[in-house]
Length: 433
Ligand code: ARG
Image (cartoon, rainbow, N blue to C red):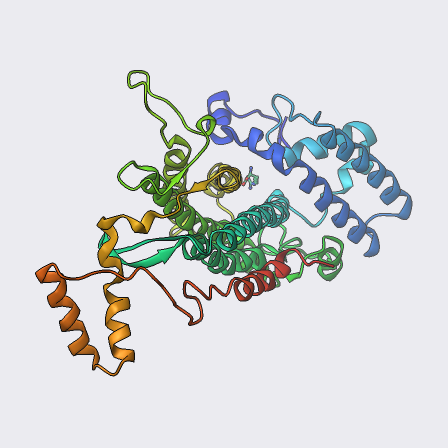
């Protein structure tokens, strides 16, 4: 049975091909579909398209459907195309003609749009909360290990002293940058498209300001064509934010894999958080961070998939848009999983002390030596030459003390300032009050 049934049923193969796994994906939209319908009918009543009694009856029935969804018992029945049809069929089955009234002034294109906006808004908030947890963990670790030095590399060659305070703190601040993208994606999702109907508005005097208020959107997607166009753009903005976070997290995962390698040995984890080999009895592998690196790399391709799916589509609704769900739904879920796993693992990370006392890191301190000479009045280029010659002749002796005081350096990490930056962004998605 179709909402658009006109006395014939489409071929089964056509049905399967066009619906695919959409019904399964739609289950995640069910609660938002009901929420959107509730706002829509309240608005219909306010403009005289439903009586107060009809509104009461409909709200009660929708409330019951919401409870079924809450209990995880909501199903899209065989032969019913999508969540929007299922909700309407349930209403009509229960209420007859009253149920048939709720679709005035809207279209499924409109419904799926508003469902997706509400869904994306919630998902992005969950992503932001997972980012926040990891951010706090990294900042804590940065403070805890701020006095533990480690080598810094350029070209993957021993370069200058670094520290675990800098390393952990760097990823925290990097996440603060990614939050800028997340806030942008959230703001794009937080606009009401409802009332765009099939994509070109309606001859009913729909009160779109009212549904904006009822659904707690920040503002309207005013232009109905722009509202319809926002399908795809909303997901694309979200995927760009996810890509930014995934890039940071994938980079962190790579560092951990490398620092766990025996040639570095800078960090380790309790045995039960590592994995073994079927042949080599000594192995304690970093599989968690390898899978994380792989997943994060894949997550960065989601924006490409969306760009290709939506490139050059004609204006207005096109069924291609349905496939967006299959790309973005698993992406937000996987992003959250990776962030939570990183937080869990880092809770147990052990860092090695005394790394830099090893003679292979002697040259980490050449620049410290040059700078000492400069402070004694030797011009930089001469001091550089002097230390360079000592290195060449094998007479260079490292002084392993570090005193970096400027903002953002080893002995002045500025973690509180970074936390303020992060909090200001987080407040835009999830205000403290
Ligand atoms: N499952 C569809 C989607 O996600 C719902 C909208 C259907 N609209 C239509 N005109 N066929 O896009």
